Length: 493
Image (cartoon, rainbow, N blue to C red):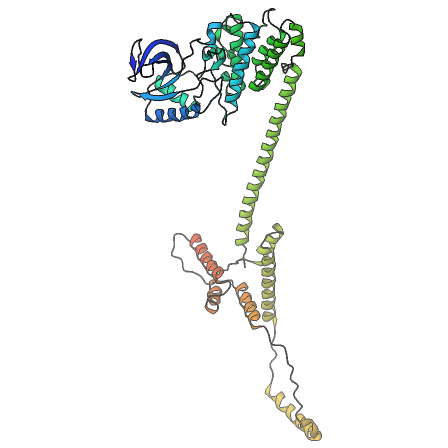
């Protein structure tokens, strides 16, 4: 939307003059004709219903933030699909009006107020990172305090505004963006605002921006931070270098910056005419990283990378071992199911002595061996014929002996041996198990099923019959198969 001075916006806001242009809209001085007060209005681009809903949620979060160094948002509204915010008007303008005119004492006040506001934003859950700290966004209140404005817009809402305004640049202003914004994988932290604060300090003191306004991308290529003039204390120069450190973890936090600025201001009050005493009693900032520290940090990174590589190798080794064990178990099961004769079972037992089927295989070998021995005995056994004459000639001798010794003819008393009653259930189980283990053909398994239709091995017997029939079908795919009863199968208990 295009705005001009004198326009009436949203029925009772009369626009007076443009105060500035932000990342996603314009800021105008306007008069509320109903309340007859001057306010600042920030207009944003046109949004759809989802964008307006997201903006409303962001405003609710920012509206709850109350801090002396944060510009409070008074009102939110939407006019013709254009969302806008009503904020207090700061007649003193922004700190940009003080560029090149600030003394060291004023700059410590600036550092204290801005870092105090950032400390409050960074302490929120989740932390609020401003990402656009610069002199234009630091206003001067009526009491002389520095106030942070233009905060509380999340990355999700930034993406919505960029789509609506066809902007492709990232949030923030290039000159005040730290080097982490330009890395391959940007990691924005709370100390990213501290880098922007350091660049703002340099601009306010010297009147110009470092590296022709190219920001931290030049620092990634090894650009050096120049020292301040001799008119400023070494503590201020040291603090500025710490804020503009290349790595986010080497910069002071907002809390550390606030405490340091407070200590400098207290010493200035106690010793207004003794700069040496002020500087001597000021707590030092963390020193800039040395080459040794950088090497140590790099070695720690290398150690972590080596640890991850070792863990990856171990994981790959365990994965390969698990896969080989899985396929080994499949091969073991295939060989077990292919066993038919005693030689097959012996060969399987030699290759897999610790198999889960070892006990059954041993039992099967014993049964097959006993059966073969029985068949050999029956084959070689010779039954001697008994003649009737021999039996008749022997009978008279017996009668003579009985006649000579009549006492022998007396019947001997019968001695009954009482044996304990057998466990019928156990006997039946053993008979059923023995019958199933002796099954080798379809006829044997069918006979077992007729005798034990609900037996312990009924399911395995049916499965054995199916395996025999499917094996015959595979061996003769083009012919009509008649199931042979002589086919053998072995099955696990």
